[in-house]
Image (cartoon, rainbow, N blue to C red; front, side):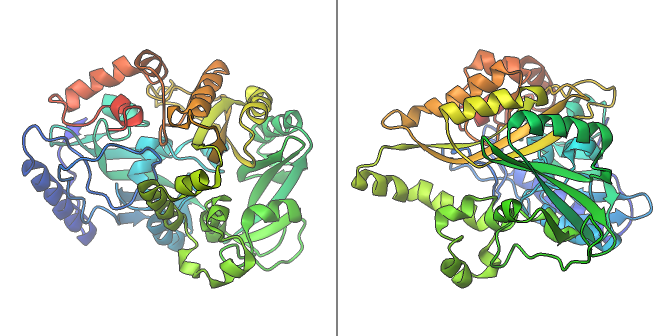
Length: 470
């Protein structure tokens, strides 16, 4: 590990170093005891936090691609660069990041420090597992370069800014063709789907056809689908039939197509953002899935970040809560979570979830962690390397009544995931007590690393961020 920036030549590097200098100057301008935060305008987090008047760090100019090396299939990327911008630059070379999280405005630094996931995760792991080198701006105001195997690098995934902020990441890229041919395969129960996932992960194929991307949707206990994506150089379905690519940023809605079309074709770019136009199925809460509204709703607004801002406005002004109260409806608890459960426990979790929570549909995304450089578990999110997990994502509200502010449904989900040997992502609300949290997320180890790179405690701790909402 070494401190300081690399200094290659090229305009992208010069611009990057200027941006880092602005970041360091904004840190130096803070009061010595002031907490350190980023001055970001956008976020994909669902954790409400207490307001602070302290100025944030200036991240102006840290949101782009520094350079791409098509021969080595690598990219040098700034930490605040969105995947939308990154993919736009890499696709020109027929390349994409190994794992591209499903929402356009997720940043590379955010996905690495907060655990992104997508349909290639069953074969390529999680975003941080394709990072070759990283510069981290620490709580001590230093830029530290680290690589796999270094203490800071290995503790960074799932640290959510409690150890610092990635300013530059060197990542591995994967070659891709122009199209993704899809098969939507139905299963009548979770056990059959679980068996199919195990086969696909082992064989990387289904019915004799290669599988490059794998995710699914459970619409009901007896209606579950796996979507199998196969990269293709030509515009045709898996069976060889020529086809025109579908467009799910227009009038059609992707998740509805899963039950209607056994096969489909998308451009590779549209496949990457197939969930973004409707934020999976959550745009229905804003009426955008109604054909008339959809026709009038500007195409440029059919984006997850627009819907996220609408949710933020509702949180700020409490519109839905006031309408429910006026109509005499019980108070609702927001249940927005992604959890990882071992593949063999997926039927147990879905049965419990149907019985105790009752939200549908839910997203299913198989993944296999590649582990650290030494093949060990990543310390702050300790999935067993090589084991198959399924990310279960569910986003909505549940009628609870006066206890809603206490989060009874979210607490029950935490307990069940823990019981089944799984883990919960921390991008949304969490309710763990400190001892349980430290046991699940390697609290003592994280504190030890933090004491090295943030000796004066300028950065908010992970527990304070995730549970105390600070």
